[in-house]
Amino acid sequence: MHQKKKLKEAEKPNQVAISLIGEPTLYPHLPELIECYKNLGFTTFLVTNVLNRPPKSYWDRILESLKLLGDSESRTVLRLTLIKGLNMDEKAIEGFDRLIRVAEPDYIEAKAYMFLGYSRLRLKAENMPEHRDVLEFSRILARRGYEILDESEQSRVCLLRL
Picture 1: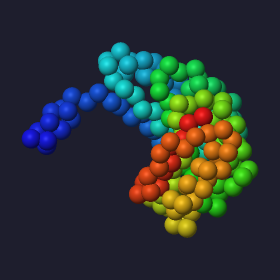
Picture 2 (picture 1 turned 180 degrees about the vertical axis):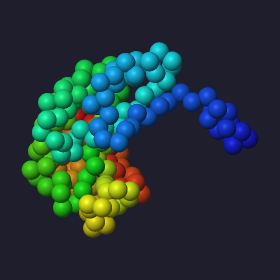
Picture 3 (picture 1 turned 90 degrees about the vertical axis):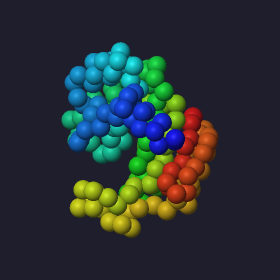
């Protein structure tokens, strides 16, 4: 019985993930696309890479996207993909904190990088943080006024909010 219910749900999707190769927030018609989905009754999930190191020419546009996120009436989640040896030190935490405060998301998801896909061409398996590393990062971030709401060891993720 459960499988039939799931099949019926799958036949009538009501959620869409907007995720492009590159940075989807740079797509000039993104607001119209999201509005179109909203008018059709869809929940949108925007997957963005705005906290990675963008080319300097995009930085202003990325900051503007973060500000718009803060103005959104939708529930927002900002994911921090944590890469061991690259963006988990105190200086990185300070930078993440500044950007999070610009975006003012409802939730922050601190998630371990996984050694998959094209990232394997530039990173190593050793760059994957263990869950204890993600938890320690989240605890340090929490000292800046955040609250750890939940965690999943299996997924190597912590959910926080300001």
